[in-house]
Length: 319
Image (cartoon, helix red, strand yellow):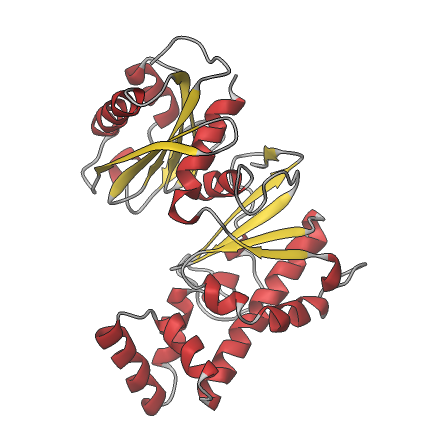
């Protein structure tokens, strides 16, 4: 890599998950000029990860001039101290000062952040929130991820754990969440929540959804949304409750954070956004000092590239 970031430089971003490292090279406007990937796994430690990132960086360098600083998004709980404090997919990195160690091994400025934060930052560079100074990203998948950008900067809070919207409580003593708490938003509107709701449904609906999952490769939430659209009253009632709880959670976030742009992504986002009117109505009931019509709710645009693009944007911000 080159030793300086010129106007013609590109920036490398890496999105590290439990199965793979995704790498992108982006220009100033967020256009992807190159991409690559390497496998990871439960045995990935700092040196293995550094080797994969270093190899990918060299590969990307063959395409364009690359600035020294690199950005890395990790699937886990990143503290403000640069230590990974929790990650089910990268257990050998937990408890380690990964930012400092990776920087020492790679020999270049390294910025490490949570993958959801990176995805949020990525949507602000050529994505759904391009040019927006303050916005909230919510990813609806197995769980709920979220990232907050305020004044063009990621907001981390006092200790680095800010914006865990999925674990905000929307129902006191409510449904059990995977985190061990009760009433978390994630326990009401996520693929994990949909799986639990299907298990409690009638035998008829349960069998139909299980058939969709096994024969058509659908997720539980996707099957529920499609069956609701097809006129299944039980599925419609379940999905209406999911949307209502999401609306309560999002309205509470807006009341606290005073953001007017919400970007929604993740695997079950299409089913949710197809019910945008229902979602806005649910939000309206809990919003303070404004109505839902004053908000912009849009689909995430970066897809699976958001995390790596956001990590590259972190590298840009280090200039």
